[in-house]
Length: 316
Ligand code: ATP
Ligand code: MG
Picture 1 (cartoon, helix red, strand yellow):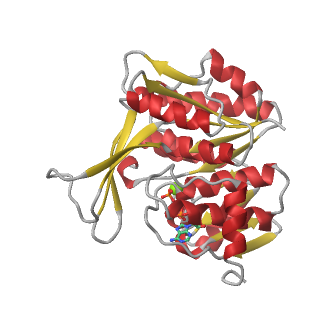
Picture 2: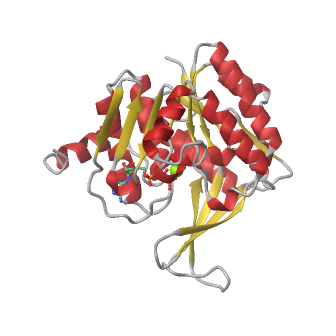
């Protein structure tokens, strides 16, 4: 079986320590944590023992090396991570308001991330790719969008499949080029992985069932809607299946969707049933929210099996 590959930002995340903390005044921060939605995704794929790699770009600095070391230790192919001599690794500063909503200050577009390209090493990785995953958050610059489109062309020509998680942060939506790229991705993917409100963001329909029909009619084979503490629902032309989440103490929700998507995609590619894949993905999301730090909560199959076994009855 070929590799799962993604292309996009590697970041460090630095977070405000207290809920309700402002970024307009000094306050305690923790981090740097390895981060970036595609990086979290590929780390989770790697932890499941699936061959995988990421096409990205970091600076020759501690933030870049922190990420490379983590991804390599967890088993991801890092050969297509370019180390840019004149750029600084991207970053995301996150704070939680008193209602628990997240607010980000991103440095993506104007960091090393903005220089992600299909290098020779990236093309070599794509030759081995049987599934390519795209995060909406990666569609931040015209050159990256172009690289993603070329990568999709290569993978599809090899008979591979594509998944797409819109992963839209309101801080990113102002960009019209990104809007067009999000629509291109929706039309190009085999598996669409929105979280609840993202389902209707790119459709004519503004109600969920109509949006699902609209997206399936575009040729998308399957949709999995992530619903936070409510679990997740799978839809394809043959029907749908909803599975509730596993009980979890929500310590840090960032990265749950990425871990969920990575686990679902890996399980399906490895031939598991829709129901088993959805259950593993819910378990992966539940583990991710229980740990502080976006990439700190990635899981092995043994850890997912233990969580599932430990909560049998609660999910019946
Ligand atoms: P992200 O913020 O990482 O982009 P997302 O919005 O893409 O997240 P969510 O729906 O928040 O995705 O979470 C993904 C999955 O993680 C859910 O479908 C669920 O399985 C699990 N999950 C999330 N929050 C909780 C929770 N509070 N309790 C249990 N499971 C959860
Ligand atoms: Mg998400």
